Length: 439
Image (tube, rainbow, N blue to C red; front, top):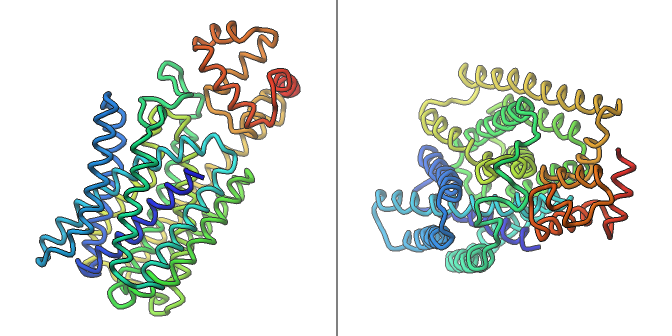
């Protein structure tokens, strides 16, 4: 529940704070992309500082400082008058928001990875955020309420994320990460996955660019009831992901990407088009988010990969800021961009499906039945090591298994408890019986 709340409050800050900044800086496409790029840069800085700064106290102070920068910048917008000052405060606020977002995404990826309902948790968090944003900005429509909500969110995030840090949030490693152990991921498959998800974000970027062309005139529609169409998009992606229907989810993502890349720009003249665009854009973002969350703990740099979808937005933002002055709907450049994105997406998604299918064929032949078990229960790389050790020496004591794995008995018991929870077993004997059936 804590993970859902933290993620929901961050998304609320991102939605409501961004719209509130736009009300001061004007609904200008260039500055919209500029602040999105600054926020993505904040995600990157968090990943780097979290990895390379050793002292926990400094990490906590940086998180608190960036939380203050975001909330303080939002409040100070009411005290300035010049456009230049507004843009400076907007940049400061969005950087602080991005830095906090890096911690939130890492927190979510690490914590929810241990839960088999990761997609549903992501969808619930997004639903709460969108409902909060709709209530505060559309239903209530009262600036002091918005500011109060952002301040309350500031305190809640401070208490949940910063004040009582978990070792796997502020430490150098997740509990199940070990820099000395090579990850078992197929590097080619991971690279193709990154390519597909990056293309998905670029397809969403085209939708975003189309929306911005009418943003100044239809901002109320964009931030109003149309935002609620994001909720079913997140739930659709989350539920399919939790059911393990990766083929189906990739095919739906491909359809969403193709529509995003080829959607007629004339639709932006219709009010209902904003709901369709937000649904497609949110579905793409939901898929990108949950896939990177699930893969991040398996890598050697979880802080970076947990937020990689947001980092792709930096590239989208830079490209968007450069093109927004020259971009025209249904122009030759628009059509060429759409065709290029469609061709790239079809080939990339096809390669992912081929790799997944090939992996399943190998498993189905019985060459490594353990892969089926690992995929079913979503074991982490270190949990896989524990399971293999138990399979090799089922009668070994806890101390002997710990020595074999080169870890402490306390850490071994942590892994065992995680394995019990994931597999639905209650004790070591039940876990051993389950493992024997899979080998």
